[in-house]
Image (cartoon, rainbow, N blue to C red; front, side, top):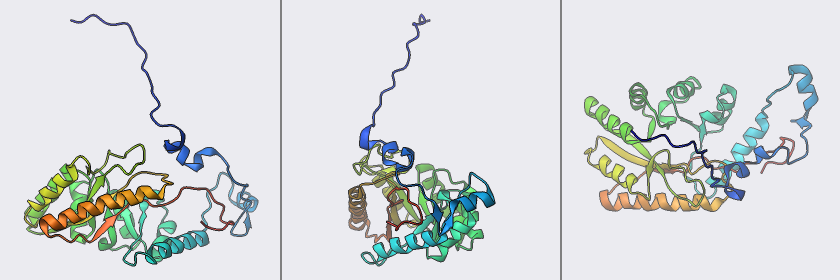
Length: 276
């Protein structure tokens, strides 16, 4: 039996600081950095508070639609074959989700709850991207039966889908989530298959070994939140394209899409101001 050593307090080391820290990239965390917003769509904020009380969250449908349309135009004018997907975890309110769907966005969900919510909002299974690290067998079987695009997050899920394909004697279209170093710290390595580590390619080889039961259709990555440096997405896209080309050269596969996850600049803005 080893003698007990005297207590030694833990040492906490700050690994990220300055512009690299997530908190410093999140402008919402720095208090008010613009003039106080006194009106929303022409209605005084004081009137909202008097009628509904405070605290109160107010959403501007006009601003939402303007931003969606501007984002879509920015991408489609350069990349015509582009689709937007509304992330349900960002805001569950049905009214918000339906605004995005009415503007052409499909649904991106990370749980069975969100999947059911998207279906309730009129989104067909084929227009749902099913993400998330913990998909149940029942959830996967439902998504498979309705033709949703399942973005595989881990080995357990990949093997379970192969089992489902065997049992149902069918092929299942899937994508895989990859993590990679795009020059942003910290590197989000907790979800998906590592590109630089070779794990993503091992997962692709395992898909090839399924003899057509699993059919790889796309590659997905999500490099982080509050990303203000556009070049990081360039790096991520280049690494996924390299992996896509390797699939074509090794297996003759022509993948349908790349999914770069959340692409937005983080900033606070009053709806009375010009959208950026």
